[in-house]
Length: 96
Image (cartoon, rainbow, N blue to C red; front, side, top):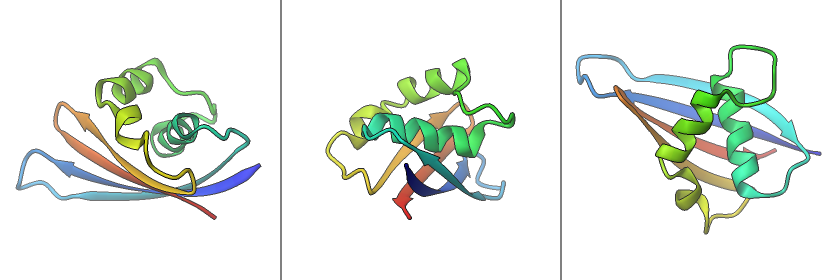
């Protein structure tokens, strides 16, 4: 099982609003980059103790074309952007 750290920076569309930064750690036995990226999203966004992505998170991941953004990156260090209705989240993932 590999351990990862994910850093998230939220940039709102409203230039008067502040950016938010979040850091989380997670472990997974998955080796595919899409699975690792989804586990990073779960670590940052899921409020419950459940390690499964919510349907809304799966939709956001797909709508942002995150899989295309990370398709040619290494699994030990990669980044991608999730686009929301009111801003964007840039996530950077590194293996510990």
